[in-house]
Image 1 (tube, rainbow, N blue to C red):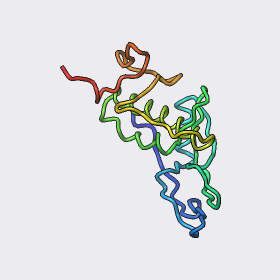
Image 2: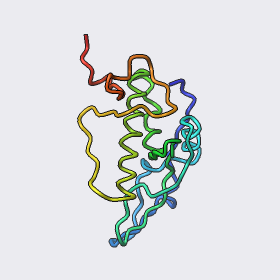
Image 3: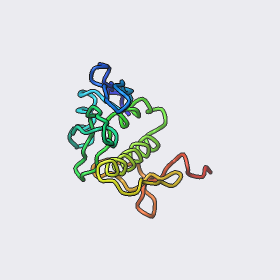
Length: 157
């Protein structure tokens, strides 16, 4: 919110090479946060940087590892996904916090799916989920059910 986080994605195409049964390709840098960005986010969230494939890998496919943030509760989310919110300070503290919480909760579910299989995750409209341990939430942003309120889905008065 205060603008001190300076984000960047991996821009070196040689670090974004995947191989597949169809040949080599260069992946989008949108899924690959730079080491500096990932380190700053990990520090802000009280987590650590871990590297893993950004997507599930099928036989014959090899993708470069992406920087993920592993939080103290074990949740893991792609650093590039979190970094995309860095410029969203204009949405206000409550919405930005809700967006980051949603991204962490959903990202963790997708990471688990890619690593362990099973049914793909599904999220209802406006889903945010529980607060993230260590994050500070503005007053009035936790609902009676214990989940974070999505301000954009709340009825205006």
